[in-house]
Image (cartoon, rainbow, N blue to C red):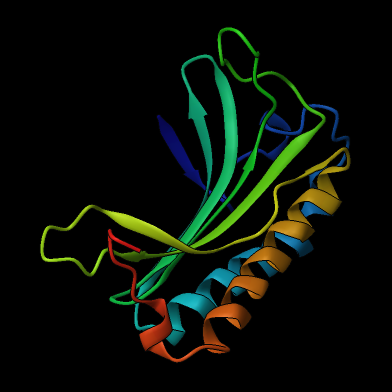
Length: 156
């Protein structure tokens, strides 16, 4: 997969019907700022990228991670139901999750602590705006609980 920073890529690759890509700059900045705020809160790193597989653009995806919880946020292109290859949108599907590492001695990987209900969007501006709002929602959810509440075990 090839990734391109959010401020260096061409949004029309994921949103082919977009006449003026500059309309996405404010919501893209908002999404980047939300990811940065999440990462800074937990002394971590963040990124927001345009993702592309050999068959075409697949997503605008971001993460903010640190030693505690991390946030994953994606805005996916539609997929062919049989081949699972990216198709031109709309609609675009939003997914936002807060994850933590497993606390078991035999680490089973990551666990979702919070997950925003997936939604689809027909408008690129609304979709990217919702990505930033979803990351802000994730940060609010994590800050509303003490760190002990984030711990997840394989047996729970």
